Image 1 (tube, rainbow, N blue to C red):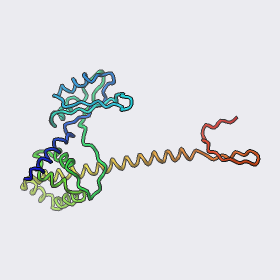
Image 2 (image 1 turned 90 degrees about the vertical axis):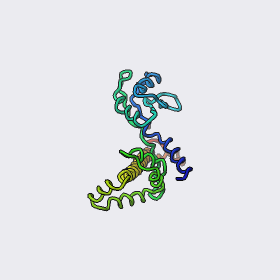
Image 3 (image 1 turned 180 degrees about the horizontal axis):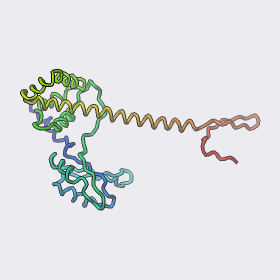
Image 4 (image 1 turned 30 degrees about the horizontal axis):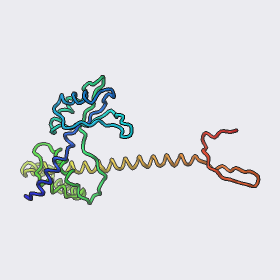
Length: 234
């Protein structure tokens, strides 16, 4: 195995923190960071804790991101810390999840970070590193073709293949996760674009309320734009 590629994969895996970072919400504003840390440490030691705050005012936003040393401890926090009472409020705790990306298009490689994240979601024995590297270089279109080819056989044949071809079930699951992630990214981008379009339409409606009123003074005619709403009559 190429040493450089192996180190690259190991570095990327170390940086893929999605499955060991949890989102902690519904934090009381009067609870201190020390109190929150102590609550989170009931599950295990922390690598980091970051309270979200407005960068302009420094005002806290009521949620935080907490990183645990490993995936299992993070999942334990989701099970056992969710609903924990802190200063009269029940904390909401979930895995923070992967950072969504702007869709690359169907013909661009999905990338090593997403392939590693998909591998971390596979149940049972994780896929081989060589498989993860291979899938990272594939595009969404190619992944769809791989999935279609694997699912082309009848269900019984596919079941036998999964049972008798080592690692095939893990590969199929990893491909499925990658396609789900791409679909989620596309849906998030579509929702964002829809929101922008709605905001633009709202601004257009506001501008449409500005009417041109002709003000005549003898032979002089001037056109001014005034708001159709809230014009006082004298």
